[in-house]
Length: 387
Image 1 (cartoon, rainbow, N blue to C red):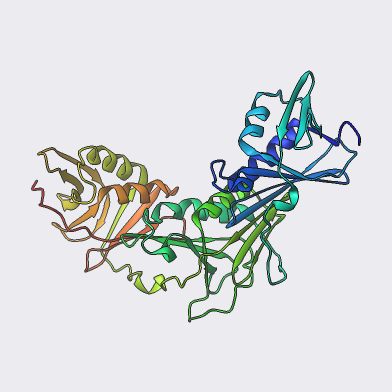
Image 2 (image 1 turned 30 degrees about the horizontal axis):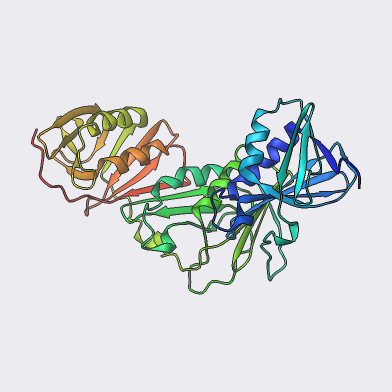
């Protein structure tokens, strides 16, 4: 057996390893799931990480491959080693000091690391053949980022803990939606195409993407143009780009047909600069003691939008900003201030329109971003704030 099985540049290896770490839990009670799999073949090395629900594969170019011997080593130990090596290092892998270890070397550095057999590493397989659809990746990444704030923090309703993905009606993009019951985000991604979705079990064709997998997909597709591909089956979704493939199980459930609860925007409108409103709300929300009970008030007074809040311990805050107002004097709505702040943080448009419905729900429309719709539900205040 050769003293060196294969060698690889640290820069190539680090990029691939960083990708697969998104699926690895280093403190997993199942030992193999805290490991990263190395599979040398020809002139490439494939790395794999898995947590049984999501699998990430990443290929990188090798300097040389003398022995195609696969193995799995502890991800946390290898991460620590990799972080200390210089960017220009050439890393070699070979037989270790014992039959249950391998040697990792770079320059004068040597380390003997225990490994587990590659045959023990789990593999997420699909019962159906994957049919890939080419898309533009960046818009999907941006849509996942913009809608992420609306995911619920609890898992009492599992079908809401992920992103709802479906085709854009009358378009060729992918719609990303999320809601926690108080706020809702719907963002249309101009991906240029939408993959064929499984036959719906009801009238709403969609899939539910887990949030952790969505985070890895968002990072992979960030800034990506052409060359991306996506595939969806009844139980899985896969995305690939530049030698990296993310495969995830989908959340088994039926997402509520949320579009039915998006109210008509109506004719009561308040147009504001996004930065001005966001800064005002952040200043006022400093006084929040209990985010679930301290309501933020928006009131139309004297041609301005007044922003008010009073907390349980007697603290209060007031601000006012100019706006384009097409709503009656004295109009008042009470909202969860932190939810409003999170909504505005997801909006990149310089101006935003708030449409107030008769039920005091607010439909938020960013100017110049027709694919984005946000909905804020009213909050029952503990008590009012008079100004």
